[in-house]
Length: 126
Image (cartoon, rainbow, N blue to C red):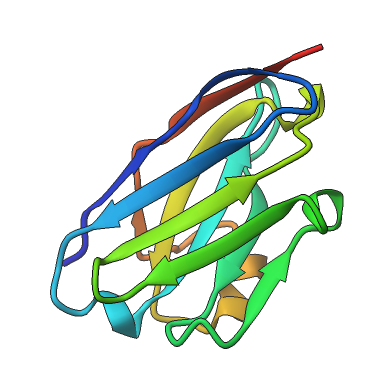
C-alpha cells in the first residue's frame, strides 16, 4: 500500500518557478515508477513527467521539455517536479502517481494507475 501527498502548488506569474513535492508512505516506494499528471478545467487528465524506480529513465510531455525536471529521492520517499518558465497554460491541478509498471508505460496510462495523490493546484497568471 502506498499513500501519496502532494505539496508546493500555488499562484505564480508567468515566467516564474514552482517546485512540487510528493511524499510517499510505504516501504516499497523504490519499486514504483513515479509520475506527475495534470488536469485543467474542462480537460482530461494528462501525462506531464515520469521517472523510473532507479531514476535512470525520465519521460516528459513535449510541452514541458526543457522547462520541467522530475527527480526522486528513494531514501526520503519523495518525488519532485521542478517547474521553470511557467506559462498560463500550465495552470491545472497536478497529481502524483505511483505504479509498478515501467516509467515508459506509466506515461501512457490513463486508467488503472496503482496510486494517485489528491492533487495540488498550480495557477499561472499572465
